[in-house]
Image (cartoon, rainbow, N blue to C red; front, side, top):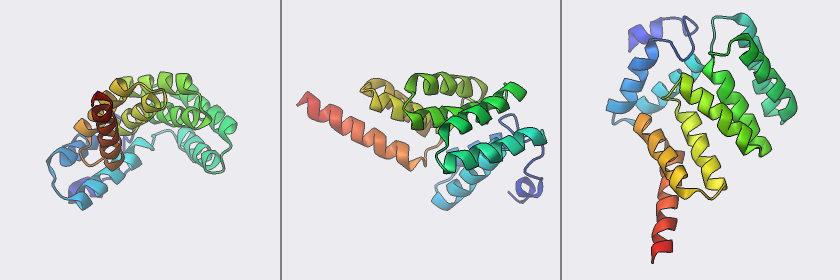
Length: 175
């Protein structure tokens, strides 16, 4: 763990960073919620970083635009990131999130698909897909998405709660 933290977090940071394998391994093997939270935080830090300072600047700008709910500007900013580096998974994920917040589920799912193509372990994208499928009334697809989320991140509380609610709803319907 100390060796992992000793490396600068922006060294090779993005979804191809080799430290992610160690962190995802921790999520699979720990039984300590604090340890899982630390691993999760480090994963997000790595995912948000690029070795290209222009992309890092755009990430900061896009996050700021999201925080003030300037969604059209955020879509544009994350689109600029994608144009600069189409292999940067977190740019796709952030734009998917903004599309979701705007209620444009079709565009969100398209960007989630690209995020997962680049980083199949992206528990944020998987959970987002589950939320969209729930909103669209596709419980089976939502359940699959939340199960996939928990397969890579067993401590994802939102996914657990959503999965339990969907299963309870299915059970109630079958009575």
